[in-house]
Image (cartoon, rainbow, N blue to C red; front, side):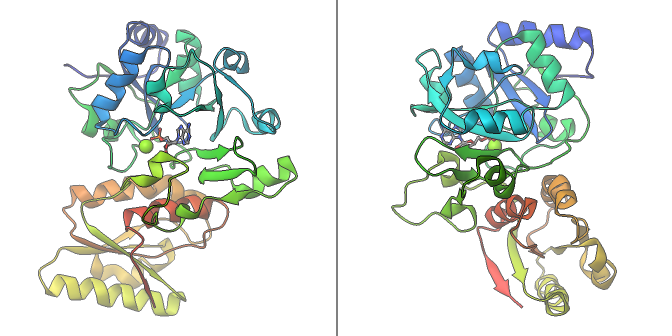
Amino acid sequence: METALLLPSAETYSRASEILSGGGLVAFPTETVYGLGANALDSNAVLSVFAAKGRPADNPLIVHIHDQAQLEPLCTLPEGAQELMDAFWPGPLTILCNKKPVVPDTVTAGLPTVAVRMPSHPVARALLQACNLPVAAPSANSSGRPSPTTAAHVMEDMKGKIPLIIDGGMCDVGVESTVLDLCHGDPVVLRPGGITPGMISSVLGRNVQIAGSVLRPLRENETALSPGMRYKHYAPHAVVTLVEGPSERVVPLLRKLSLEQEADGVKSCVLCFTEHVDQLSDCRPHDIGSFSDPSEIAHRLFDVLRKLDEEGMEAVFSEVIPPEGVGLAVMNRLGRAAAFRTIKA
Ligand code: AMP
Ligand code: MG
């Protein structure tokens, strides 16, 4: 299959709508990462999303809408959902709702809940308006690879597998949406993202829990609240190790670890803050952004992780940030890229 890469235009949206209505797939930018969209009400179209990504069938998809009125046929809202939608939509917050029968089981992987989100990216909004369908869209990467934050990343993974990618430039937030469960008692963040637990808590006026497996591996026999948490994710081919501690100890240790690997013939590099690039100039520093700007680190992270593969890195040592605010989303993704392998400096 020929994969077209088109800039947003009225013509592009009408071609994309035709593809979606006909059961085909379209990759499009959102403010978080690029999504791979299918008509959420068409089970066969949804199945082809799983096929294109190589995604396990038990990992459910998020349904994207442009207007809250589209929710009525799809689901009922749990307590607190309306307040959060009013506060944060359109934006990077996904909310689990109680599914109605019209939503195919292929979308929800058989779960009684359906995850819904209204993206804010102008291209995503224009596409959702043009097709006027609820669009099931996971991230547009091959399963297990870092999520795509540019159209070129999508092309790397989806070339020949889908008919159309809409190029909307680099995604702003850079990590996937916050996934929030309000259906099972206390609010629980299943996946951290741009909307932080603190922001949610301040709207709900109650405490928000964070799923245990956000910052550690799932334990044996532990059920994943969010099926996606079970899978290895965001991982480059290299063995990634996180190094934590005070920066006056972390920086020399990063350098030592990386140079030792190089001496053993293992291609190695470091991921470090802008402030430390100069001190690490002899071990292929990859600038993840300033330590004072976690949003910038989120914005760059997946692009940096993909570059590691392009460059054939085999061992990577990375700095860490405090898991607070957007830093929680960054450390969830970095932690999983490293399979939570951590050394204390
Ligand atoms: P992605 O679409 O690639 O951003 O992944 C969507 C994430 O949302 C995955 O981690 C899913 O496991 C999670 N998710 C989607 N629907 C549900 C649901 N009904 N219950 C729990 N987690 C969900
Ligand atoms: Mg994904």
